[in-house]
Image (cartoon, rainbow, N blue to C red; front, side, top):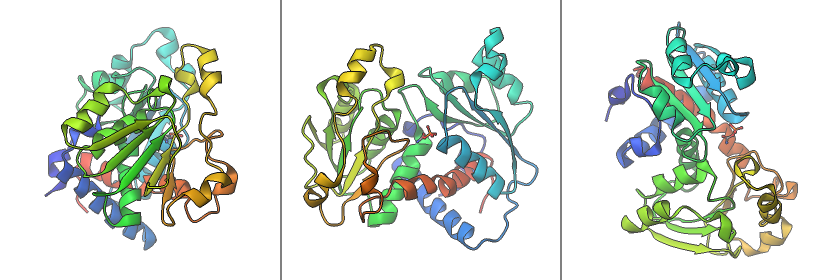
Amino acid sequence: MSLRRWDKKHIISIHDFSRDEIDFVLEKSRLMEDRLASNKPMNLMDGKILANLFFEPSTRTRMSFETAMKRLGGKTIGFNVAESTSEVKGETIADTVRVVEGYADVIVLRHHVEGAARLASENIDVPMINGGDGANQHPTQTLLDLYTIQKEYGKIDDLSIAIIGDLKYGRTVHSLANALEYYGVKLTFISPRELRMPKRVVDGLRDKGIDVRETTKLRLGKADVVYATRIQRERFPDPQEYKRVKEAYVLDSNILGKLKDDAIIMHPLPRVSEIAPEIDDTRHARYFEQSNNGVPVRMALLCMVLGVDF
Ligand code: CP
């Protein structure tokens, strides 16, 4: 397989990738991580510019793309506060990205509207990467999640994965569940009834033969991977409903004796109260490593969409 198929292509949804392509990205990310560890400067993106257009808050996605581009020898421009842009004067997202394609070689877009990245990508020639669109998709997060799991276990197939929390509004879990259709995993979705995984996602997994269980109970004894998520306050139409469920599941020292010895705990971050700080120094915690893995994975993806082989 070659990276060439991705030259100048947009990355909007994890469904844009076949299983072989995901596996290839994970392999290339590993190479990139090795190159990073060698501490040799890279100039693969010499003269290239990445535009980070963040209409919604972000720490990890925005900064890891910025780090990725700079580590590759490129430069970045962009914004992280929508109120500082001409959107407040009524400019459409379609116009904004058409303007920015004149300034940059690749665009990363985060927006609160589902489908914004797909729509905005339709009229531009430079590659666009979806950095999260509402409750819909976050494909680069999924690739770094899969990379983290594979780094730990050397595989993704056959693992038992529990995904906990806000499965209704969480874009990271929608993308991740979509990707796991390709792997022979056992999935347990743990959420309050109001925040269940959308039926279309569950049906899609079952159609592919994936063993899926849905429950409200925090039973983690069989899980190899415990993937916790934040309850997405900003997406709740009713603040009272948020209050009711915001602390539905908390991973703290009480769960430690109930996990498999080698189970790992992941979280896309930011966390609020769903993982207590006392978990951070246990052998199970992987969420900070997971976040760090965003850099080599995004470096590999930038090379793919800009046609740079490595
Ligand atoms: N995981 C993630 O998308 O984090 P940010 O919102 O900080 O980018």
